[in-house]
View 1: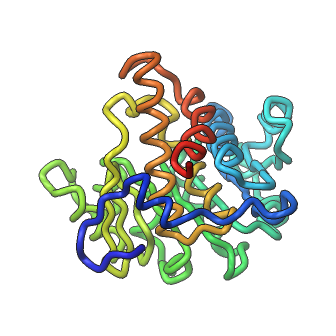
View 2 (view 1 turned 90 degrees about the vertical axis):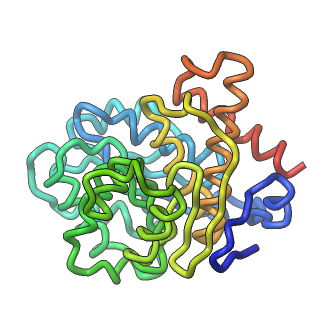
View 3 (view 1 turned 180 degrees about the vertical axis):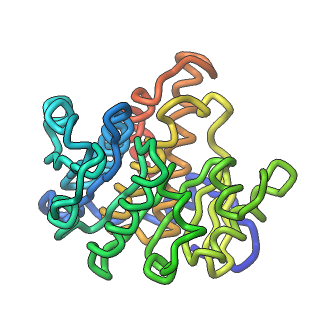
Length: 288
């Protein structure tokens, strides 16, 4: 399932033809994922992303957060191994990040970061530490690093970006993207950084692929929702999906989870944590 400049609608039927990798025999066969971020004030973003990754089938989860909150996060998410990062508390990296990313299939950086310099340092350290075979997802403050990154080629061909409109404008070095068509925004970012992009309801690849995802609604614009999206995409990558497949499936699942909640709770008022629990149900429905 590919496109080369033509916008393709992502439907359940299309996704059934673009089947996700199988369950495998063990948790390791479904990939190892690290989510790195989580400042002292916002560790919940990493937790949401990590749980979303598990809910879409990732096998092994690690979380890397500010050292000061590592203990509480470990207690709150017993499914994950948790590493404390002193650099997110104003200290120096003592090799903790390199140890955490070692052996990981996929690394997601960004959820819960609240300091631009700390985000830049964490992205640079991650890119230096990961193997060439490791796929990456960059979200939130981690995206703001890219325009100034001197080695964008280090992420090209193995990264998914999940910007919101403000982050998309920064990536394109514009004041805003309000007057630019959504597919054009996604395509320009994809080509500039050599990455697959999930931007609102559009997924774009640097080769010119364009997909439109019709699920979702305005109620998904709620605190923590973007962390769930990024986690779902990262979890699918860890399972073995390719970049475009993970972005299309993840964007579709995130939107469909919001649609399911809208029918029960209302279009507004549901919580990002509730999206997480809907994800496996949406996968079952889509694959049926």
